Amino acid sequence: MQDVRAITIDLDDTLWAIGPVIARAEKRLGDWYREHYPRIPEHFTHEAALELRMRVFEEHADRIHDLTFIRCEVIRRMGEAVGYSSLDVEAAFAVFDEARNDLELFPDVRPALQSLRARYTLVAVTNGNASLEKVGIDDLFDGCVTARSVGAAKPAPRIFDAAVEAGGARREQTLHIGDHPEMDVDGARRSGLRSVWVNRHGWKWPAQLREPDGVVNDLHELDSLLGGEA
Image 1 (cartoon, one colour):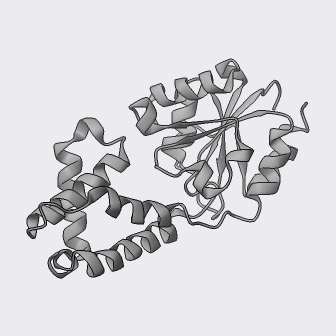
Image 2 (cartoon, one colour; image 1 turned 120 degrees about the vertical axis):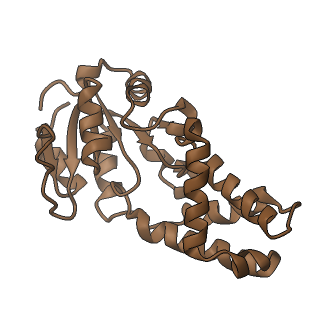
């Protein structure tokens, strides 16, 4: 794969497994509710909270790229629904956010990114609200582009355009790496970037999508795929 100068990299489910992280963060927030606002867990089951979240998504379709806003709005509405009009939304979100950024990287991530950063500009690109600094990987990246900061989520071209700009190379010299066939791989391709699918689980590529430029099982395989380019 020739003439790559910048690499943009997805975070959730590419550098760590996000499912267990969110489950743990929601449990920690639930425990906090039970201590400070007990009527919330008494009245809102997990299913009821999900239903409320879906209503917030529907009512704020113009802000679905901003997951911090969505979660804070859900927290606020749950509080109001059970009589906590003065619920401290900022404190509640901080409990969730701390746990959301308390995570374990896949074993290949740090050594692979250290190797890549010696040769390429690395830019994180995420629809989520993980913090590189809080996770402890800000030293591995030259920049970070988020859906919230751009105002659009993958696979929208706007977020890939911002990522290309942050990487400082032409879009044909920019390679995007991610786990999601539609959001990452096809979205990047439609925006003129090359793309590599990180397939950690041996899934089958969706037949309706054009094949990616490369497929790796983990980030260690990127060195050989890129041919040790300088």
